[in-house]
Image 1 (spheres, rainbow, N blue to C red):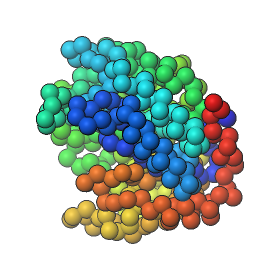
Image 2: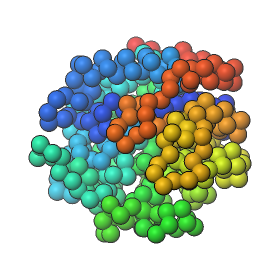
Image 3: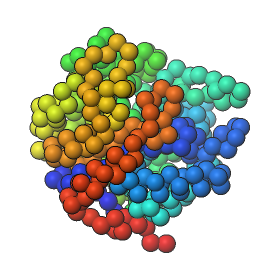
Image 4: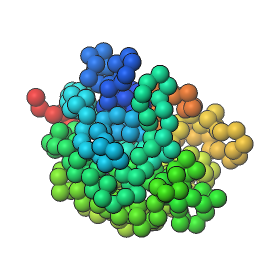
Amino acid sequence: MTNRIAKGAPLQMGLNFRLHYGWDFGSSPAAPLGLEAPDRAALLDADFAKIAAAGFRVVRWFVFCDGRNGIRFTGERPAGLEPCVAPAVREALAAAARHGLSILFVLLDHTFAFNPIPIPGTSMIKQGHGHALSHPDLFEALIGNVFIPFWDLIADHPNVLGYELINEPEMVMRRRENWFSIPSGVGCPDVPDAHQLSFADMSDRLNRTREAVHQATSAQFSIGSMTARWMGRWAPLLDPRRDFLTFHYYGDEPDFPRLLDERIAPHAERLAVGLGEFYPQGSSCMPPGHSGWPDLSASDFFRHTAAAGLQLAMPWVWRPGINDPGEIALEECRAVSRHLHHNVSYARSSLVHAP
């Protein structure tokens, strides 16, 4: 039985996952960091065991990230998958099946469109692929030559929940001085002017990917918005019967329960909604110069989202990097999972893929 995020269903606990950003589904030039390496596969299995034991049911996992590998390009044209992708996908699906976890694959990060940067010590480049989003023909090549072969590898595996096209699509849109102003594009200065998308262009790319997902798979499609302020723009693009919407929360509006009531509840009446990213460390993760950051723990976030009728909540991030505030507190999450367990309407064993 495949897991689904459905309107009216109880909250599922998930988390944002990675072993090593940018390399999990690729082949690194130095020490093996992709899942094709036996030690990485063993590490994945151990991580998934811990995550499942703490009560999590969903992992949100970036695939091609900033474009550093996994995709073959001919000039600017996406031409296919690199050979390292298939064995990595097989390892990811096998581990998810063993531990009863569902994967939400995020195909691209917004850094995919940032200015290109050399990777030190290699001849490789990361980022710099905004043309594949901004140019319609190249985007069709991205779908036909990369995404569809990726979905073919997965072949409607029951432990795959769904797909996002791009993490925080607003970040590659036309820039505005005030990121949280009236929704008309927020953007990021790292995206070259020539590759910034209008709202209409981004809506087209999201719609085209959603159609392709539903034509090629039985999985769900989702949009992971950078802020609750954009929910009203993205919600009409989704089919309530097949899709779901998530928003990311990083203290831009300090009263989180009020945000749920005023910005999220109207959309939750129409379709399934989740909290796609949040810091679970309370006020200790407040950035310099930021005021009004809510002092909420992971259990606070899970309880608030459950009470608001959301279907999914996922803290950031497993294996944090140097710019992340710290580890996810598994014991705290395990405790709140037990508290919420009576609301879970599916059996964990139903998510385990039969060999």
